Length: 377
Image 1 (cartoon, rainbow, N blue to C red):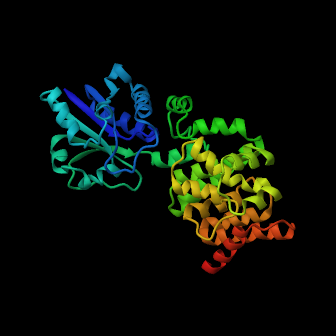
Image 2: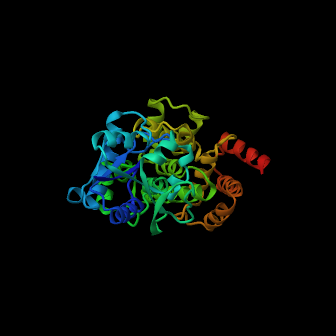
Image 3: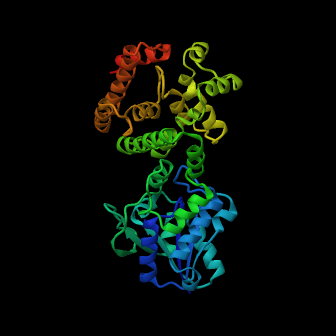
């Protein structure tokens, strides 16, 4: 028996996975093909979708590539173990179940390049025949005796796709349609948050929310920050604007939110407290636990003397999103593409100028932000 094994996070499965699998099926012509979602990859930080959701999406990928008629199926071996499983353990299991089977391990060139970091990598090298697909710019270790699939496969990243899905960006060219449908039905990658915000926010506010999330993703990708976290912060930064000013004041009072100069804000302009309400909603309603994301949401209006790179990025994205009609927004966006710190200083200057020229009350944190921004420039 010839068995093709293809493991991965599949978080989510995408067009690159499908193209690689189809090419391997044609080259190897296996009797059985097992797509094995990892429980938790030893070389990755974690997963966004739950194990059951990733298994459901992997089954759809198997179906798209022939399914049962071609012996292609998802294998829940790692998920059912419920703990980290190393690559060397999968071939061992298959040899016990199928004595004498010829086992092929399918991977992309990016994963193959890291084989030296795999546990018992010498055993893995020897226990399987390898078939590898090359991604753009990818290289395959010369020490790995592998059959290389012809051509170059799509440079698609699950990490970037997750961020773009969270930001509400179109992924139809990168994720097979049945899997996109599964993502929507199960509310994955913030699809459930999108639905809730669309109901809760005014249409213009929801459009602004998506514009900020899109810009946050773009800037995070450009400057080497975590795009998925940036997208989530952008998506939830104005969640508190579901309330009118009186509603914001009631929420802040009932939840006893800690807000600098709280009494002055609630008496002068309660909507200025929406960022603190948004942070609380992000934590309580949407289950966000990431401190950087929560800080970015909390500080996107007034800022603070000390802000994480993600918080500064969101401050810029909120000030310069494409839906902003003033000409300074486009200038800040152009600056941000090259220099995020310079764009942050521009955004702070613009916001303070609007407050002063409009004769509005200046929150103490906004004044402190300007001083710290100038000092660090």
